[in-house]
Image (cartoon, rainbow, N blue to C red; front, side):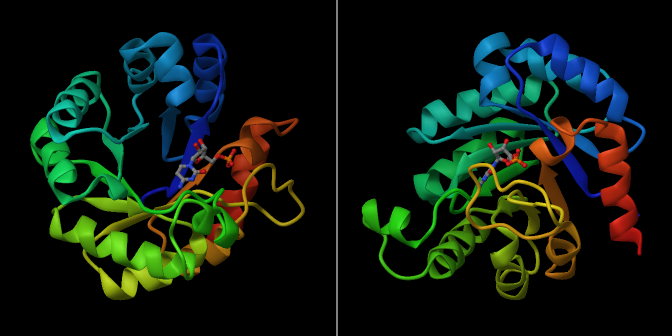
Length: 225
Ligand code: C5P
């Protein structure tokens, strides 16, 4: 079985990210390099983490005109990313441009951020349930032929049933008893997998644990139960 845990390396300093990635590389399935590291260190952040050998998820959450997104996607791929993210709300043409930038592989469309709930969505003009919006954006992502989507564990089953060909990545994962931090739509690792998530993106419950590799190992064993 592919190890489904992608650890979100949300650090200011690339050296801290590399150190923790080294500590975790035997226990997890991949690493996510997000905006903080990409903005602070540029493509080097992706290159250095990819150099450790596990697949890298470059979470740049691109959202711009298609031509700009095509170019940015190409750069992220060139740096060694296995997956890159774009916002599905940028539209089908923009997602297709991202696919062109990577040569057709590894584009993931972010549906609704897991930090957004009903009132947050309504404040940006999206009325109705978050799940209805996720469903709409996943259908658009499928039309644009991307590899997968990012959604909350609470919508994983819905997306898998409606778009079985999309690989589903879920952040907003919190083992029992850990802090929610700023996440709103969360679930446990085993719930997320049972709902059909292919990969779990987990950050602070692992990286801020007193013993990160023990925290990761505990999640892996929960999933194997
Ligand atoms: O620390 P935590 O487990 O909350 O980290 C979750 C990671 O997933 C963060 O890096 C965040 O940027 C990312 N993410 C998210 N919601 C999305 C897409 C990505 O929380 N919809």
